Image (cartoon, rainbow, N blue to C red; front, side):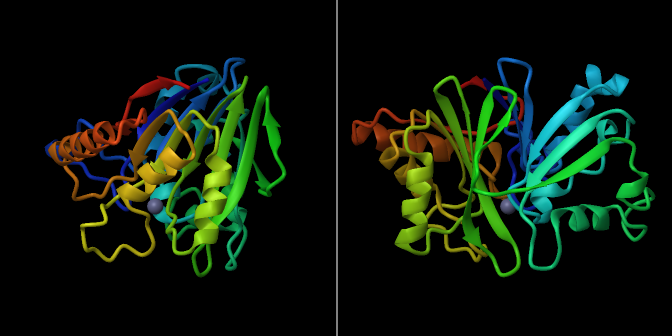
Length: 280
Ligand SMILES: [Zn+2]
């Protein structure tokens, strides 16, 4: 299977020139299976460009099928959902997995995004494509030949945050975001979930040295330690802080790569960038 990043920024989009190489759209990653399966992890603003691309194929003719895996419903992970043409073309089918919050179901949240207060669409009932919302659980499920596993990893006050593991033909990628390893149990569960995967995509907006109030994010060092402990081959840092320019990200990656060399680690480390495509 192949993965491609469409949005790698956390919190808010960044649009000025010094962010354009890694990209300024918020969280969205596409996974293409060997048998034509199409899966999208989170639908931040990167989902808009992905949707435009998909319109060139079956989705433009109302014959597209897409599985969306939503980790949680904070804006930077869902903002792109109502915008691309693919969700407005009748005949397209979107299956949406994600957690309900204590304030309402995922479907209610999405319907709310389309309410007249925010959008001229006037609610989910008036959108063109068929949207079916599926409850998420720890029970694995199939998308074509791909196995998807999900795990509730952290709990914000009203919004649980889930991690996903996607497996095909003995290869696996794991996607973890917006987690703080505040106790050993969370770390242990993340480690067990990631163990044996080839690729880990992990949010890492800040380093341990940076003193910022960020409401519950792991650090770059956490992502690297989890990857090493879980024997991951390749780690992509994403959910980059909106203050992190392209040059900052280059410097950051070079710094931690040098540390990995010193430790004789074989882990390949990258900062995820929009457009980057990778065979898992
Ligand atoms: Zn986030």
